[in-house]
Picture 1: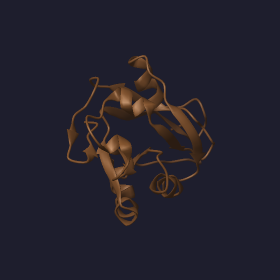
Picture 2: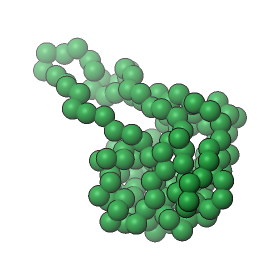
Picture 3: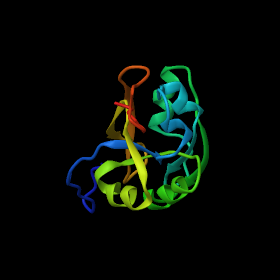
Picture 4: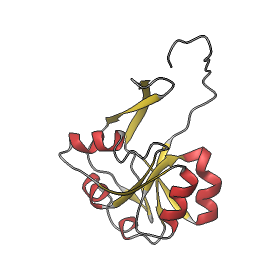
Length: 146
């Protein structure tokens, strides 16, 4: 956060990022790998319309790229799109839990961690991704990205 007298901030809590997708999504069946994640169609959440972010950095470590078909201004909007399509989105688990349940979406835990870092844009905080290991295992119909 920039050091300016008119701005202040306080960490109010933390949340885990999850991959949201329909329970009957084709990627929810079988072994879910980082390669399958990259091959899946994505939407992003960005008030500024960004199509890339920490997930792209994490995928690049594995030599992979994803296809982003839309950038939406809120997690609620992104989850609505995901509930009606084959797209997936990464959202904050606790903050989005009611919408995930209401829309019947499956959350899978991301296999990499995202941590806040200083941004070059005043008043914003960027996020950086740190991949843990390639691949993941499936647990029932829910992809596990942990």
